[in-house]
Length: 370
Image: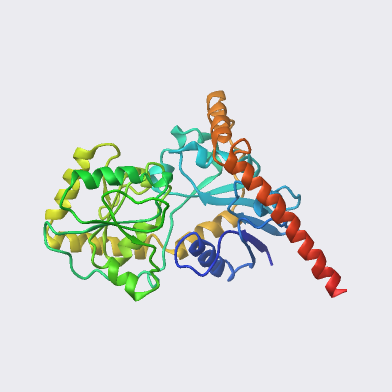
């Protein structure tokens, strides 16, 4: 039987990325022998003749996927990780990895996948497969049975407060809509101006779900965000998601798109939602539930992965133009993960210490067995 070595977070949390590794592994196990590894694990896997390496490369070169893919003998090497080309520094480190892999399963929204050919990563396209995210609706049950009255509808942002989430734009939107109730569920080192901070919430608890039910709209405004699962979670609960196209999701009637850097258009759209009839909101809610049941499922996600494992490998990447090569090299150099930056240097040093500590513990275990 083929062994799949799955390198991906796979803990017990219902949120991603743990939900990705856990749900995929449970479905692969019906066809393959599956072994699981964390993406920051420093060990090297030695392949058998029919083994497949599948998973998420870490930016640090000392980690499991990157160390293991260098070993000869794999039946296939398949990269599976979030993708967008809105901010090259977040994904440029994958360039040499994808060049050596058989396939790249890009976890991303249709906004990003349909424009790969116009991006700096167009040469990846022959190897790319579009993977939409998914959720288990039992983990995110319906909680929104009625909407607040027109003019009194409440807006919540769910996620981290960091540079990837463009939270400065959230603050500008709140300032442009005085009198609207904005709140933030999540963690971060600083507050989001104009948003009441509700802190981290465990959505496996009834108290957290009851809190979500008091809101009507989930707002996220990423500038370079692959496809946040919070949009799908909001749909499952019954909230109406509102997002920028650069959050990955476009073309779905129940997901309301708003533009970047256009406060006038955004405030107009949010005021429209404030006055929208409850019947219309309930219709959008039902359309979103149908979409979750028919498209954003873990069964569909796993089927696409299985198809990539079993189908012939595509041709090698088309060579990147000189301009694109320079773009990628500069993005890699300026990335927070670069060894020339404090964060990247720290990551490398931590990795070396982690690796030798693990080897020391393994030797102690062997000595003890003897």
